[in-house]
Every structure is written in structure tokens, then in C-alpha cells.
Length: 278
Image 1: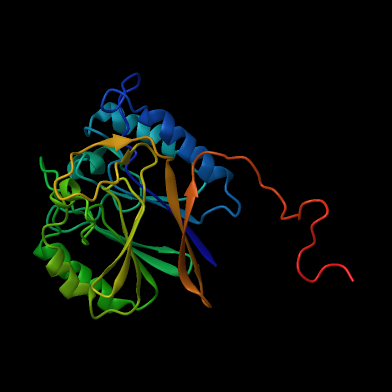
Image 2: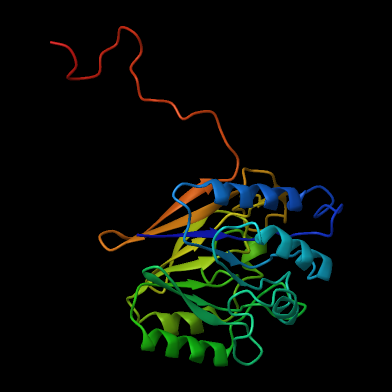
């Protein structure tokens, strides 16, 4: 059994500053790390699909190093559009894959229990949308050809459309090229994405795309044709990808905060469940 935690879009800020004036993303991140460490069973690894920082400020990366160091499991990360590839390489040196890549992109592979991770870089300097590029797509094809174990592909920008118009407008621009590469490979279990700050499951190129919610604020669910860009404070959460040889990969959403319970399933006094009594 392999258990992989998938967190995304922490948007860390320099200490004392809120994100977008009202979102205390640093506090939210602290709570998410505590929830991951407290989870039973403990995840084998954490995959962070981008936007560790809000502005790629060295102070934000310094806070990221401090917070992530509290995790009792390996952390694999990729840049999002709010990060910078070069900045992440420099500031997060020592984390897996930071010295790997092709054509300026940060991409690498890792073994996590019974599954293989392929981490990709969709960030574009100074732009909110994303792209993989021909060189990285060729590299991806080679990695998929060389190893047919169950594989998780991590990328920040989701390749499938969500119906949230203002976010789809800043999605993955070369999604059709990605579909051509991954379509033939049956051993891809999941595409792990971030960027949209919502829990979204979709099909793409015959695969399952799991887009995790943010550990901080969430994008408002607005499926109108030209809905405004707004966020709210729906409960922060993360995904847990549970892989076993019998069931393959099964994805669960886990909330960061605690809620009342757990409670046993007991019938009310004087009420019998079917089959009880004589």
C-alpha cells in the first residue's frame, strides 16, 4: 500500500502580510502541515503542485522551507505561475529534483512506494497561463516509455477545462500536445494538478485528472459564461491518493480542519435496525 498526499496553492506571504489583503495563507499552511503529520496512516510522501509562494519573494521561500521542514515525510514540489522556476531551484535547493530538468524547465522522476512520480513544470515567466513546451513533452514521452509502473504525473496547470471561465482562460496552452503524448500509456494512474483552488475530477486523454483544492482560500464555484474572478473561504483541504495492487489508485479528499465526531452508528433508543430483535 502506498499513500500519497497532494497539497497545492499555499500562496505563502512574507510574515505579517495577508494574501489579497484578507487571506492568512501562512496560518492556513501551518494548519495543513499539522493535519498531514497527524494523519493516520502517515502519508509516504507529499506532492506540492505549485504556488508554494504568492510572489516568488525570497522571504516567502524562507517561510516555505521552515514550514515544510516540519513534515515527517519526503516533499516533492513543482513551480506554479506564482512561483519562478529559477527562484524555486535556488531557494528550495536540497529538495528532490531541484537540480534536474530540461530546457530551463524543472522536471524529474521519483519513486514513492509502489508508484512512480513524474513531476513537470508548466510555469511561464511573468504569465498566469502555462505550457510544457516541446522539449519537456519529449522528455515526458521518454520517461513513460522507459518504465511501465503505475505513474502519477504532477503539473500545476490543469489540462482539462473546468467550466470556470476566468480560470480556464489561464490554463495549459499546449494541452492537446500533452494529450498526444500521454494517450497511449495505460499505466498513468492520475494527473495531479492545482491552480484552480477547487476539488475537481475530470477525464483527459483517457486518464483521470485530480485537481486538488487549496490549503488556503478557494475559487468561487461560478459556472456562468463570464463569471468574475472571486474567492471565498470554503474549507481548505487536500487529496490523499491511496494505491494498492488490488484496487489501483483511489483518491480521497481530506479536510484540514477538525469537525465534530467521530460518532458510532447506533440506532435511537427504542428503534431497532432491520434484523435486530427476535
